Length: 194
Image 1 (cartoon, rainbow, N blue to C red):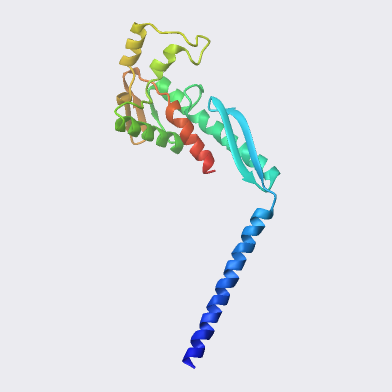
Image 2: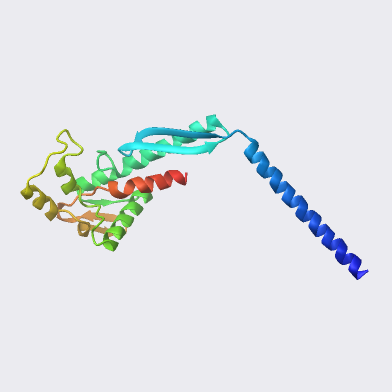
């Protein structure tokens, strides 16, 4: 009797296992038998060509998601770009002191200063005064600044001029921020997690 019960239990277990495996295989086959499409679009965003690609079974829904992703990229860029006049970073660059309540912008600043310290300035978000000398964002692109201009800009640049105390951010010594070196990657991460 004991032996018969063990065989019966073992057979039930194997039947359950077999049914489970078959169910998983049917599910997987169903997934791959549908016609899913590669959805991709490239648009100008973040000062460059941004391509978003994913796979979907529903082309109409995919286009909606693509539009939402690009809207998110634009919204975040409008908060952190020093080239957008009414962005939080542009306002900070003008006023030199600002309380920042936007989580995305605040966390990006914290992360920027962290990497600046870890790399001893190899990455530095406070070089806007220096970067603008070459005129990349104006009609004077590719100009070569005079050595004296570079020396002056360097004297009021650098992450050590950025003070963050809770949500208050202060730019000392007339420093200004350009978060382009970190913002694009962080915005793409936000799109990926969307």
